[in-house]
Image (cartoon, rainbow, N blue to C red; front, side, top):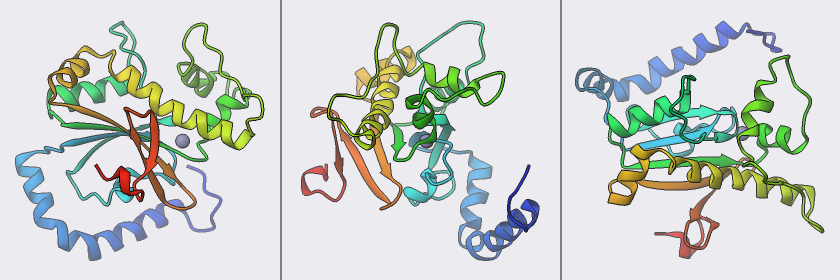
Length: 222
Ligand SMILES: [Zn+2]
């Protein structure tokens, strides 16, 4: 790994671990032991972005064993593809739903998403593999055109697409039979959320209204 800091990255990690082991671990040691013996049984799966500013455990103040998290560029869920390919998100989903029997799946989008930015800017490949370009391409359905609307500022367009990524992931989740069946049965609930990095604000998707509402708003309390 390369760090721009003058402190070696290994020292940064070790200092962090020392703080964890002297301050947080003592309060959670019994919980860790219990989780090691009994195994994990989180009720919530979070699908979030790799972005270092958007840590689900921090945002939801979660302790060990509480969140089953998969993170990728732009919090995307691919469509169900039972082919010969290797599918990391699908593998995590399969385990979360079929083994852990999570009751909730939260797709957590966020502001200032670099993956969405690259998609909007039609950024040049960062390597010959163009992994981000190919990954973000799944965002667009065949024949679909994603464009800035007339009179829409670039900032508004970006937020619209960041939120659209949450909608797309929720839509794609339902293409997985092992997700769709428990959702229709009522034993699994899908949720969308959007984190405003600058303010630390959280918006939760009202699926009926197809709108994100601030959790601070009175009518978003349910
Ligand atoms: Zn992101």
